Image 1: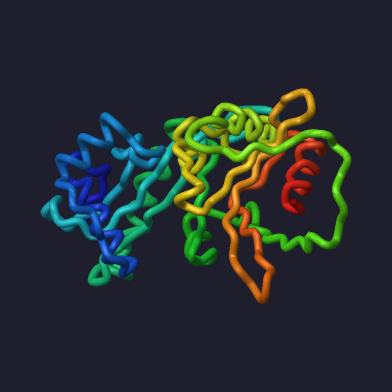
Image 2 (image 1 turned 60 degrees about the vertical axis):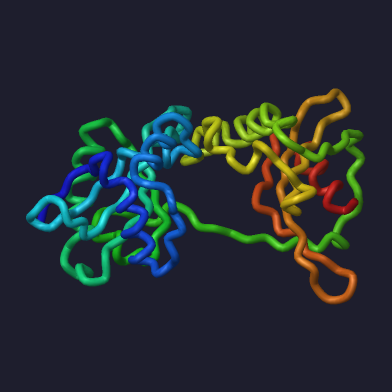
Length: 261
């Protein structure tokens, strides 16, 4: 088995391997050359910008890909410091090579390399905590889903207003609110422009996904929420929030006011 970072000519194959491993259709119709050109010249998101950061295992011919995983560089906050973090994803092994040490071999190569490059943290979302504990990973957080009955509170007297984001009109304000929200929170990622794909080119009239920014009476952006509506029984609907963050208590109250509207 040969383990190394992928070559440019192997970029499309990674997508095919992931589709085969997870049994979903691969709809990519571009050639490898076209995918590569777009990633270099017009990357859509951090994953494309760091397209070379993929570790793959090959048969002894160094050509037949058995599986791969990507490592995407981030910066995170920790105890007042900006620390390097590598996000792990796309962990895929072709079915015929499973239980053959493909991913273990990739980790045995990439983890020492990350350490040498000064990475203090590595994050991933595990399909199995027990599996990733073999490589030194441990639970550091959990996902919590809140359901709030809008009849449980009344409007707050904050005096601000909300604006529906369309196109790129609120992009800079959205970034400022997130930066204030994440500041001082350990393990939070320091986002860059391409970490906000959901906040640019917005077309809520078409997509039925609504992003609202709360502004104080003084005109300062203080809260952001993105939601879609799910119709429930009768005339009731549920707001499914994908983004919900605020810079201070007024921002939180302003968003809750909008949910009541």
